[in-house]
Each structure stands twice: as C-alpha cells, then as structure tokens.
Length: 262
Length: 209
Image (cartoon, rainbow over all chains, first blue to last red; front, side, top):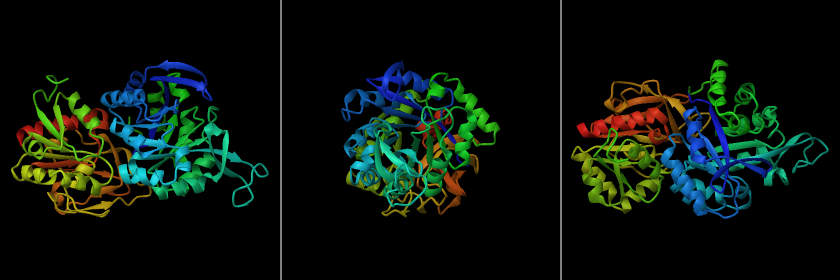
C-alpha cells in the first residue's frame, strides 16, 4: 500500500527560505539546501518549494538553486510560484525538480495544464488550488445553487474567482493534472486543523492524489485529513519552528494506524 | 565525487533522447562515485559499460526521441551483445513492446504497458517492495519503501522476469531482471537510502554482466 506523505513546504525568495505572514514581514530562516537536506534526513517524504518572488519568470538564481537542490536531495521535490508557461516549467524540471505546481496560471492561461501534461506527464503536474468557504448569503454559487460552497481564490485569498473549487479540481484533473495541492485559505495559519469538509469534498471528486494544506497544528489534524481521503499533508510553520517534529509526527501517525514511511 | 564510492572508475551513459530529467539520476550516480556521460551519440550508448534509459512522462514521445537519434538500435545492439541496459520509470516501460497509451517500445522484453487501474492514479509516493525471487539487483531491498510516480505499468509476458512487485489496488511490476536487461518502475534517485542501495547493486550487476 502506498504510504501517506508528510510534505514540508518552504517559501523561497532571493535564494533563501523565508517565513512571514501574508508575504509581509519576511524573516530569513535559512539556506534552502541545508534545510531541505535536514528535513529529508528527519524523514520528510517529499518537499515543496514555493518561489514567492514570482515576478521574474525562470530567473537564473531559482534555476541554480533547483540544480543544487537536485544534486543534494534524495527525496522528490516540487517547485511552484508564478509558473505561467510551459518553457518556464521545462527549465525548472530540466534543472532537476520532479514536479511543477501551477496555481493562478492554470486558471488564466488556456491550455497550460494540457500542455504540461503532454510534455512532462501527469505525474509531474500539480494543480494548486486555494479555496475559501462561502456561507449561505455571503457569495452566491456561480450556478445560483443555495447553500455553503467553496470558492477558488488567488493572490493569497484576496481575489475571488467566482469558480467552485470542486468543479475546478475536476476540470484540472480532466485536463491532465496528476495531483491536487489543496489549500484552505480560511484554515491557513490557524493551526486549528485542515478544513475537513473542503478536503473531503475534493478527495471524493477527483481520482488523483490530494495534498491537504492549511491549518496543520498536530498529528491528529493530519490524521483527520487522511481520514477524509488526503494522500498527503503539507506542513509549514509547525516543522519550521521545530524540524525534529517531523519524525515525531510520522511516528504518531503510524501509531494511529496510518501507513507511514518510518 | 569521482574517485570515491562503490562506482569509482566506472563509466555509465545516460541516453539523452531530448526530454526527461536526467540530472537527478546523474547526481545520484555521482554520489556513488560513478562518472556518467549524458549523450545522444549512438556509438557511445552502444559501447559503454552500462547504459541507462531514464526519464518521466510519456513513453511514446520518449521512444520517438530515441528513434530520432538512432539510440533505439544502439540499445538493441548492446542488449544483444549482453551489455547491461537499465531502464528507470519510463525507461523500464520502453524496454517492452506495446504501450496502451500509443506506440511501441524497444521490444527487448515481451509484454504490454498498461494504464494503472486504481482509485488514485498516478501511483504516487513511497511504497513497499516485495521481492518475488532473489535478484542481485534488489539485494537488501525486500520490504523497503521506494518512491513511485507513474500512471502506466509493465505487464511482462514472461512472469519469470519480474523480480519485485508493489501493491497499489493490486500488484504492479516494480522491477524486472532479465539477464543484461533490467529496469525499475520506481525512482532510485529519489528513494533515499534504499535508492542508493539499488544503484550500488546496479553497479555490481553491470560489472558482472
């Protein structure tokens, strides 16, 4: 049986790993390769690097970092952040990344997911979806349907897109995405647990692995996400402040009965 | 790093068919002290001590890339001469005949390549190797977790070539070992310590082949 995965996510800019709230007040927390190697040694199953600079596409410092990372790292890693063209993705994958993650451009660039799937295969294409909970009366579902729903948002949650997250996940998979990285903007940063309703809806709607993201505080939160169908859990602050939590979380999950790589 | 490790002084070639991420495989071999040349020159691919076909994505476009450079014939010739060929992921799939997603492979081994049927495809993540028989290629790897990322799997006509399986809503072929021709569906370059072990085994295997 394929193991559930614990995936630390590192925000990178200017060749450093940073931490901040909503991209402001960024604090340098270390060298990406050093941190990545440490996380890998501690048992991280995979890593995600988010280039939060994301203004200059395919810029050399990022590619050099990926090359260095690929030479040192013995676990898979995904690179995302501002990827909007196939050539940019190609440069990142050729530099040694295993997967690329596309978010806003998947919505805005027609044919992007299809082209990435055709060129690199579904297993290299992650569609990142940021979603926000909409209570009845708050924002109407695009179809006019009453009741609670989840809206796709971009720009860190500031731009509502008027698209149902479940429908968008299905569309992205039909176009060729091999994995969904699902972030609840409501839960992100709360450490109160993943949005299980959102996560469960998406897991039930698509036949590809779903990575739950946003809200992880404890092993129990991660177990809850697995219980609603997530194949993997993205973690950030809880492991950045104490990387030695990685093996602890994994062994707690294993003890709780989840298949983990120990 | 050349000059240290299990592969000191050993030369391998990575067949460059114009696509695929070869750098990570090259780096993993370098960590074992193996000097690796990435080349699209058929003579170099034909003659090297070990030839590796790596890569991800679609088998059809990978095969077209091999054919366009004359690497298909080079690989068939070296296999016929008993010189070791290792396929990794799509490289393993290329060793076989017919691909369900379209096109044909090198036909060094008989059997189709079929789409994985499971609740979640791609088969993505760490999964446990189950050895079906002793194989020098997989020594020390029984029960180890290695990293998979694929939507297609090989279905060898001769079951005897299957050296290891993995379970993903049923058994999938994880490794084949057939004389000078071998392959793994997982990614040793991204499989931590068990991946290193596989690569060291490959070196020992190709030296004795």
